[in-house]
Image 1 (cartoon, protein in one colour):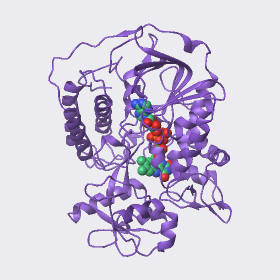
Image 2 (tube, helix red, strand yellow):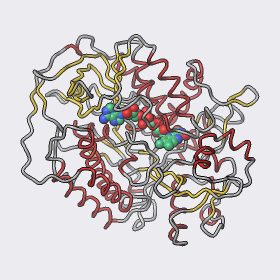
Image 3 (tube, protein in one colour):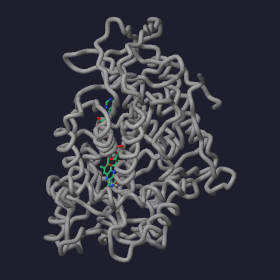
Image 4 (cartoon, protein in one colour):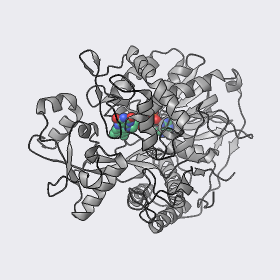
Length: 537
Ligand SMILES: Cc1cc2nc3c(=O)[nH]c(=O)nc-3n(C[C@H](O)[C@H](O)[C@H](O)COP(=O)(O)OP(=O)(O)OC[C@H]3O[C@@H](n4cnc5c(N)ncnc54)[C@H](O)[C@@H]3O)c2cc1C
């Protein structure tokens, strides 16, 4: 690729294998969301597994997922319809074989989740399936009302904790993937409280570190989603694909000072309307599907309406809902509204869009392999080819489940037992920096504002170039430093990935899926292809 980062670093921290604490494992899984948990469970059938996550097990996008998981589970739905909906939403960039693979494997893996204790909501003894925007049939299964992610993660976590072949380590911050002279992944260097730096040597490593929503000022993502896995993989030389495609969720609760809690689009599936600050319904003016138009269309329409009405937000109107049903079906949102004194039977819910899902990621093949030998990726950190240029709602939990299993199989069946016991000798040194030190907290806040403004829902050449140049400026003062805490490493990772996203968005001079260029509003067949980024070796 053409532009070069201001500071090109292979490792963020120096280390010497002769003096660093070390662990050995057949298969290392980084991340405890749906993808990592499912990968660890699968791999543990064939070899010993070490599973790490950077905070508590529950700190993940998975735990926060509300609406549900999409799959063909009954009614008049068919695999072909789910495949067609996914391909249509992906705007020409989905890999059809991958779409077929994921859709066809969905029902069986969801039934397995139920066997493992996940309790999906039922109606008359059958899984209750809901209609969501972009889907032509009702196919979204939900658990605990609007806490589907927690319902699934709890079942997977119980199984992981009971597995004798999984060593689960929480509060392990993975800093960098370690590669040998041939470029193959041989483990990870990380840190944990009370232990300090630690190397985990692994015959195979599965990256399941989730997304990058925290690169934006407005986001639905929890604190852990700082793009660490994407940055680590980039430094190690992996190919990253489709980094310009960040999906924005149209409706997050907008209360100044409060965190941006997501208001699931299942609400719109069940009849919620969007109205502007004059209480006028506007979606039919933008798309015939109205409130059920795909996410990117709804997000852009809301943004346009906010501009036209000079307002910071729009509203969801559910005043016509049965209050009892709402409380039962959406307990999380009901509680959230009550906590802000919003009475949904008389009041409107203030909402605006925010960064939600990283479509791009580490490029993988149908077996979950990345371009780096012995490194696999699954879940939001991966670019499998399922989503193309736009993700169909509720397809990401499904992707994590299916590709978690696939990556777990590939990474464990190919374990060359004994390889993990090799004690590699490495000494990485980093010269001290002579440039000034900037406040990393300040940079992170400013970076998130720049990404929101310049690499947001709508984009244009000049602001994109400015964003890339501003990030490059910060990189000069941050990437040359050695930090010994997560705040510093996260700042370095966020700068790296923001820079990659701005570069890719600059290169895609067209509008496709979630990537909307005001200066190139049409889809251009010449760009019906992926943008791959790789660190120059
Ligand atoms: C509010 C919200 C609602 C959503 N609703 C839905 C929905 O209804 N349906 C749907 O399909 N999708 C939904 N999504 C998207 C979906 O939740 C995610 O795409 C999916 O859960 C990602 O799973 P994952 O396993 O890839 O990553 P995550 O669940 O995000 O897990 C990532 C893991 O990696 C760990 N990690 C990260 N960095 C490091 C590091 N440096 N060292 C060690 N560990 C690290 C984290 O600690 C975490 O354990 C929603 C997302 C959000 C935020």
